[in-house]
Length: 146
Image (cartoon, rainbow, N blue to C red; front, side):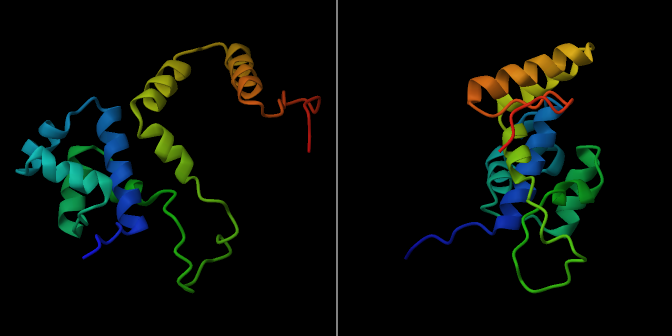
Protein backbone atom coordinates (compact mmCIF):
# COMPACT_ATOMS: atom_id res chain seq x y z
CA UNK A 1 0.00 0.00 0.00
CA UNK A 2 1.34 3.44 -0.99
CA UNK A 3 2.12 5.98 1.71
CA UNK A 4 -0.21 8.97 1.77
CA UNK A 5 1.52 12.32 1.24
CA UNK A 6 1.24 14.82 4.12
CA UNK A 7 -1.47 17.45 3.86
CA UNK A 8 0.04 20.77 2.64
CA UNK A 9 -1.37 22.64 5.65
CA UNK A 10 0.07 20.06 8.07
CA UNK A 11 3.45 20.37 6.33
CA UNK A 12 3.29 24.17 6.51
CA UNK A 13 2.32 24.22 10.20
CA UNK A 14 5.10 21.70 10.93
CA UNK A 15 7.67 23.79 9.07
CA UNK A 16 6.62 26.85 11.07
CA UNK A 17 7.03 24.86 14.32
CA UNK A 18 10.52 23.86 13.15
CA UNK A 19 11.42 27.41 12.12
CA UNK A 20 10.33 28.89 15.46
CA UNK A 21 12.01 26.12 17.46
CA UNK A 22 15.26 26.76 15.56
CA UNK A 23 14.93 30.53 16.04
CA UNK A 24 14.88 29.89 19.79
CA UNK A 25 17.84 27.50 19.57
CA UNK A 26 15.70 24.72 21.00
CA UNK A 27 16.36 21.07 20.17
CA UNK A 28 13.66 18.65 19.08
CA UNK A 29 14.42 16.71 22.26
CA UNK A 30 13.86 19.76 24.48
CA UNK A 31 10.54 20.56 22.75
CA UNK A 32 9.56 16.91 23.04
CA UNK A 33 10.36 16.90 26.75
CA UNK A 34 8.21 20.00 27.28
CA UNK A 35 5.35 18.22 25.46
CA UNK A 36 6.00 14.82 27.12
CA UNK A 37 6.78 13.37 23.69
CA UNK A 38 9.80 11.78 22.02
CA UNK A 39 11.93 13.82 19.64
CA UNK A 40 10.79 11.40 16.91
CA UNK A 41 7.20 12.56 17.44
CA UNK A 42 8.35 16.18 17.18
CA UNK A 43 10.10 15.25 13.90
CA UNK A 44 6.85 13.78 12.56
CA UNK A 45 4.98 16.95 13.52
CA UNK A 46 7.60 19.14 11.85
CA UNK A 47 7.50 17.11 8.60
CA UNK A 48 3.70 17.15 8.57
CA UNK A 49 3.63 13.35 8.70
CA UNK A 50 1.52 13.53 11.85
CA UNK A 51 -1.18 16.17 12.22
CA UNK A 52 -0.97 18.44 15.27
CA UNK A 53 -4.26 18.59 17.20
CA UNK A 54 -5.68 21.90 18.36
CA UNK A 55 -4.83 21.50 22.05
CA UNK A 56 -1.31 20.30 21.21
CA UNK A 57 -0.81 23.25 18.85
CA UNK A 58 -1.88 25.62 21.63
CA UNK A 59 0.65 23.94 23.93
CA UNK A 60 3.41 24.25 21.30
CA UNK A 61 2.54 27.92 20.75
CA UNK A 62 2.88 28.56 24.49
CA UNK A 63 6.26 26.79 24.68
CA UNK A 64 7.57 28.56 21.57
CA UNK A 65 6.18 31.93 22.76
CA UNK A 66 4.07 32.72 19.68
CA UNK A 67 0.33 33.02 19.03
CA UNK A 68 -1.31 29.98 17.40
CA UNK A 69 -1.93 32.09 14.28
CA UNK A 70 1.86 32.24 13.74
CA UNK A 71 1.81 28.64 12.51
CA UNK A 72 -0.69 29.46 9.75
CA UNK A 73 0.98 32.62 8.40
CA UNK A 74 1.67 32.09 4.69
CA UNK A 75 -0.22 28.80 4.61
CA UNK A 76 -0.95 27.51 1.11
CA UNK A 77 -4.37 28.15 -0.41
CA UNK A 78 -5.89 24.75 -1.12
CA UNK A 79 -8.35 26.19 -3.63
CA UNK A 80 -11.31 24.56 -1.91
CA UNK A 81 -13.73 27.19 -3.17
CA UNK A 82 -14.13 28.76 0.26
CA UNK A 83 -14.29 32.51 0.85
CA UNK A 84 -11.02 34.24 0.02
CA UNK A 85 -11.85 37.90 0.66
CA UNK A 86 -9.85 38.77 -2.47
CA UNK A 87 -6.61 37.28 -1.17
CA UNK A 88 -6.43 34.26 -3.51
CA UNK A 89 -4.42 36.19 -6.10
CA UNK A 90 -1.51 36.82 -3.73
CA UNK A 91 1.41 34.41 -4.12
CA UNK A 92 2.06 32.19 -1.13
CA UNK A 93 5.18 33.20 0.84
CA UNK A 94 5.83 29.51 1.60
CA UNK A 95 9.32 29.77 0.10
CA UNK A 96 10.22 32.22 2.89
CA UNK A 97 9.26 29.81 5.65
CA UNK A 98 10.98 26.96 3.76
CA UNK A 99 14.15 29.08 3.66
CA UNK A 100 13.90 30.08 7.31
CA UNK A 101 13.30 26.47 8.32
CA UNK A 102 16.82 25.57 7.15
CA UNK A 103 19.80 26.12 9.43
CA UNK A 104 21.60 28.12 6.69
CA UNK A 105 18.56 30.31 6.08
CA UNK A 106 18.11 31.01 9.75
CA UNK A 107 21.83 31.73 10.31
CA UNK A 108 21.95 34.04 7.28
CA UNK A 109 18.83 35.91 8.39
CA UNK A 110 20.08 36.36 11.96
CA UNK A 111 23.48 37.61 10.78
CA UNK A 112 21.92 39.90 8.16
CA UNK A 113 19.61 41.49 10.73
CA UNK A 114 22.63 42.33 12.92
CA UNK A 115 24.03 44.59 10.15
CA UNK A 116 23.04 48.09 11.26
CA UNK A 117 24.03 49.98 8.08
CA UNK A 118 20.97 49.96 5.77
CA UNK A 119 23.05 50.86 2.70
CA UNK A 120 25.40 47.95 3.37
CA UNK A 121 22.42 45.58 3.75
CA UNK A 122 21.07 46.85 0.40
CA UNK A 123 24.48 46.27 -1.25
CA UNK A 124 24.55 42.71 0.11
CA UNK A 125 21.08 42.05 -1.35
CA UNK A 126 22.27 43.48 -4.70
CA UNK A 127 25.34 41.23 -4.58
CA UNK A 128 23.31 38.10 -3.86
CA UNK A 129 20.81 38.95 -6.60
CA UNK A 130 23.72 39.48 -9.02
CA UNK A 131 25.28 36.12 -8.07
CA UNK A 132 21.89 34.43 -8.49
CA UNK A 133 21.46 36.05 -11.91
CA UNK A 134 18.46 38.13 -10.89
CA UNK A 135 17.94 41.71 -12.07
CA UNK A 136 19.17 44.20 -9.48
CA UNK A 137 16.68 46.90 -8.44
CA UNK A 138 18.44 49.48 -6.28
CA UNK A 139 15.31 51.23 -5.08
CA UNK A 140 15.68 54.40 -7.17
CA UNK A 141 14.39 53.06 -10.47
CA UNK A 142 17.82 52.43 -12.01
CA UNK A 143 17.67 48.66 -11.79
CA UNK A 144 17.00 46.21 -14.60
CA UNK A 145 13.36 45.47 -15.40
CA UNK A 146 11.57 42.80 -17.40
